[in-house]
Image 1 (cartoon, rainbow, N blue to C red):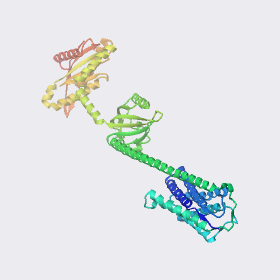
Image 2 (image 1 turned 135 degrees about the vertical axis):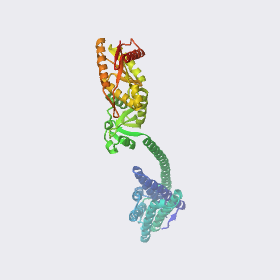
Image 3 (image 1 turned 90 degrees about the vertical axis):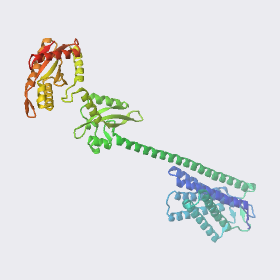
Length: 556
């Protein structure tokens, strides 16, 4: 029985195979580029696409031939014939999921795929239900199966190794799809050459009222296939664009992240070079300490981590100081102040401190960053400046400026308490004789010793000051509310001072005897000014000096 072929339908079947292969290749690439659920989705889509490409090519190819007798196709076997093709394609895509595939696995998978394609073809042929049955030339039958296996191997290698071909993606896909489409079509038409229809054969699937059914089926299968393949290509293009946009966004984010990390590293380096930095948790436990913290505290990093700042506590600050500080930072506010710490060897150092709370999403601190600057030298310089401004450089006693301030405070305290006080003006006797005979160094040594003895004779609330030369002032406070008792107290302290100053002085092996003339001016409240008190005490001292050596003169 002669066979007549419809050339346009043959071309359409080959085109369906090529377009389907092109779509499958794009799906294979997306599958290998994706991970997780996306890879499984592209595997399923690619397997179904390649299976439908093989089946639609076969089906259109079957519709492309005509016999001397009317023919038709049993619907159920025709549709079921698509399942072996889809299963074979899914097997191939499943194998291609792995980044590295052994050649033996590709060869074995190609055998199964080729078998599935062959089953699809011959199941579709059986849908003709010819009587007598179709005979197949054994040699051509075997050749068709071999072509199906080789086509499967080619498809697998094209999808696995295609990206290694030094060609742009689009030309590579076009070339690969043409090769795969021709191989798939070659298997079908080779198998059709081996089909033998007996003279007088009748197609049992033919329906007289379905004369236009083949044309409709060609149109339907072609339309569905093209829509599926076109939709697949659009999906790939959309996914690639999204992936490209995501990759660009990720690359930008990574660049930004790297830049931020570099900036933070530079800032951290600059901060570490300049400042003492420590980080603690909310309990105050040290979790980070930079090199400068280790250097100034003399503790190693291992000794600091896991400890709190009580390790370097100096004991100089009252408890309220730290209570107010922790209350501020616990509320999320930045605290700034100066703290005195104690190093491992016991020496004290001062740090200008800023503590910054890092807040969590709940608005509560989860750690504290302390940034400190060593201001020990500045504090020492300030203390030195203060000492030079308010204390005598030789004896260390308060000078005239500080004395005047202390006197003002004494008068205010006397008004508030109602207690009496006194100002004592002391002038050393025969001091000029010592300076002239032994030199100023001996005079200075005498002044230092006199200052020490005077401080030993008074209470902590009292003040001993040096006005200059050999003149000293002693301010006595809180002597009592009764004037007589206050005067008696002054007399006792004055006698104590006179006795102390009368003791011999050993000045570099030279024994010297000295005495002082003392003038005392009593006060209570602010009836007299500071200047008036000093003038009255000075006059009293001169009266004492005129009277005799070691004399004491008191005025009220």
